[in-house]
Length: 162
View 1: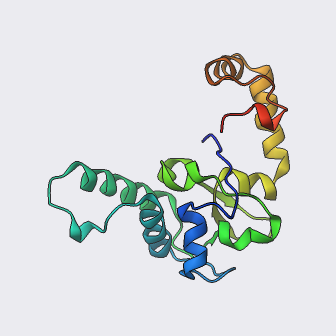
View 2: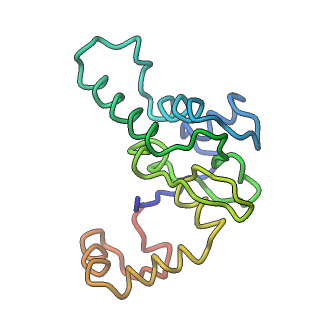
């Protein structure tokens, strides 16, 4: 499970910039290839054809693309942009650092699938956030990670890493 870093919609994050540029209309489902393209742009990764054949960045991009191909469904999928009405602040870390591992493919109550960051998943399913908080508070692993990352109280959002 990825660690959420919450940013305001007004920030200069690539997630917010994409919406401002109008690359995706609010509420449009996306295909697997569109999600992969959007993910690579948000990560700041240049397109495959612009890279030398054996550079480290190309190898990383190939890993990202392969993992997204494996994890994403072939059907059109909702994304964080489809849930703006929930007022969840997207996790820049989920979207840009390791989105191929940190983003979540979830089942929606209507049977559709959604590819969303932690904050949006928790806005849709608040009980999952509560489950995570209980884990931080009650498990040996959660307590140890709290020490490592300096959490004072997993129930207090201001004590979580930023």
